[in-house]
Length: 383
Image: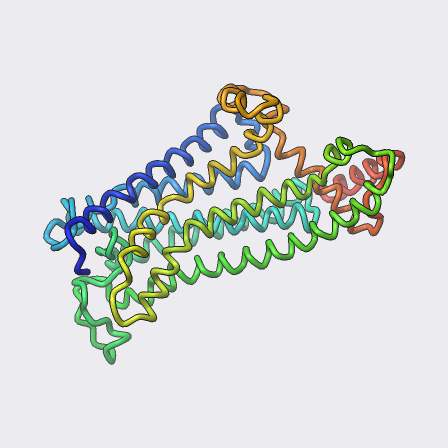
């Protein structure tokens, strides 16, 4: 790669900081769901977040190791003390982590089904969740095991992953069917087939879903203004109180997608630059790749904890007291606090069902009638 000693040191050290934060964030989510409040396991939202966090533990652990598992005989790599076997192990657990962005895509589908299609909790559990888990788990395991069996895991520039060895060897697909590589033959094809194609598909797919969801929320917000807020008797506080729950839920989904984009922006730029340019990728891009690639679990935790933070800020009444209130709420088992997201999602479903029925947002006098219609539809879906 031609890096200086300082640059090589930076590539070895920088991932450890963000990978540690990512591991901590994912471990906190897992602990919260499985220990502090196991009732969350009854909700699809928390189950999806839990599986996503488990996948992140694999990826963040592998990237935290950074250069340690890289074979010590490879020149120009700082702090490399590993062997071919340790390198393969690191590549394996990093590849298992591909399930995390896939679960982010599944989570965006979940938000779309809740906010755009008004699917009930029971309907999602029966018709969508099994496919989400099967897709992410099978993709992660099949690609990881296949890569291990084909000796694809080698030093790839920052850590061990799918790459040809020794560096600079010619692969069969680019050399008239003749390979000069000892390991990782045709690794360039497998990089795309096992990883980047799926990542970029997820990026484009969730972008389309979020655009559709945004358009639907905009229509619903317009309906809110026309049918609920038109009354001159409602003051400013009333309008804030009745703000669309669907917008809150959609915003939560958008933030998880933002976490995906922030994590994979520079790895994507690095990959495109490497394919399109004849020279080396600028070190700054490679360094940002090493910094952000391990970080998704940290951003996911911030988004996951956001509803609790907003609730704490509301309860504290001032910014000065918010930090203390957030700390108390972290260790507080409060059903109202823990179920804020679920309440928003249920109200969002009801809002969109009303909108789909062409009735806009009903006033308070007809609320009981809609609640009964909602219960009848829920019963029909669960039967």
